[in-house]
Length: 294
Image (cartoon, rainbow, N blue to C red; front, side):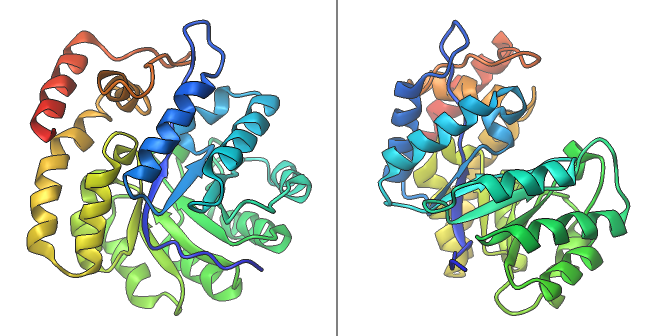
């Protein structure tokens, strides 16, 4: 089994599109270089921010292949692999070539809303077939179901290859329960950019960030200050990034971050339906915030 250190700053990459709707690999390469040069510790490929549900199987394979070629082993690559069909997900994991993949991030099953026993059973099946470390992803606002602290801790104790969780519940009490009772070597990272400072102050060890698409250097600085317990310096960066991290989610993700990336001339802002481009007021707001950060 491979080893992977989840600590630090991961970036949940967007998928740039041309106006015609096909993937803009030139812009994608530019984004990869921007984030690596900005100091992120690893890349998340095919996460929620990638508009994963709108991508065909062929496009997903092409994105992974391109990412591996472009990264050239400079930073680890985490692959998003989640489904509300456990059997289908297990089959997909079995068929996947993980030779250049450091770990998988697996979101809780969405829409069909399993109970805690069902969630445990789902992730048990994932852990038993995965040849790489597994990171749980708890995001109740998108999935309609919450991985409880008890279920998370049971999975962490029962499966050595479940190495951490991306926690985006926003429930501080639940986060504290996990942090206080987790087994050694189990890593908890934030799934919410706006809460990186307070959650790391409680003991989390990093973030898988949307903001880092646009501002990898600043987000990495924030996380590194927190890891060194230099909260005074961390707060300065946090307060500078906070308006941006809040604004990019006002009209949904990745609507806001794609608008910001276009303003920064990194990638175009085209999206696939059912998502639509950011409104003019949000674009104007983001321009002002970006000017203040830069």
